[in-house]
Length: 366
Image (cartoon, rainbow, N blue to C red; front, side):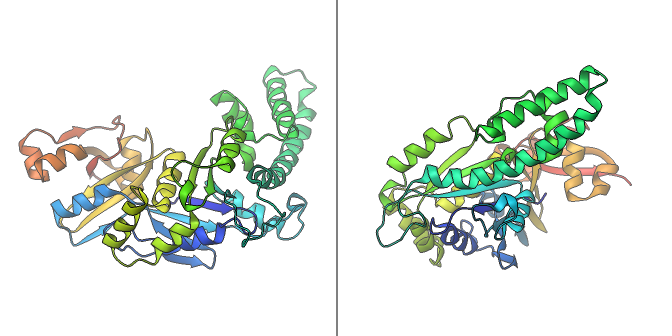
């Protein structure tokens, strides 16, 4: 399951520095490589300490982590919603992503000139938000015009859909992002989702701070937190400068020592990837054997056959059963055989809801 997050932000907010740090990131104890697909797209592993533990226990020939695609989206100018500058390309790139990583400058430094003269992250946020909202408003207006043609017959369902669309139009016109509008899951699914609104996408606001503000934040991050309180969005404090230093360190030990000195348990890059994963309602299950230990990405509440289908469609089509070991049990007993002997291997059918960390083996017949 490919996950793609787009990094957006105005010039000189630290967006490119963060992308470069991501592109040089090293996963935990193992140096799984970053892969560049295009000049502004990279694939990076999702940090998961459980893979390291499983590797030590199973001693496989190889370990395959799950990955996330990071896209450095450039080209935003005021008027992007009308196609100015690289506006169409910018908006198209955002539309193809699953989540948005919105980088905001939250540090003061006279040596780094802000594009608008001074540091005001909420204003910067609103510049990008406005362009996305205008594009969404255009999408909503087009759908309203289409629905209005059929609403004259008085059909209750159509009239309700028109009511929801008008509600969204009013919300966007007030300068609010679509994700902050309270809708029932049914109304959202039936009347909104088919428009793929840009401001409906889940977002993480990354406050690029100075070193001393990484843990506690500062006045700028407080202003951002207040501005997004109704958005159902996440916020992270990350120092792009620190991340760029970590990115060039060769050994896991050096990186850990550097983070310990700063009072940090893990890098901002790792926290960002994990937050993106969580924001998209994703979990991980594992397959573990001598040939390979591998992490697989699925959505929460996915049933066993669908989870099997992530490996291969034949696994889902011919699903018979799943043999499941809880991660904690596997670590406690040390092997699949020991778990089986201890009665910790459960045989599950088609209705089993896969849980994060499950170690699974699928039986199928095609």
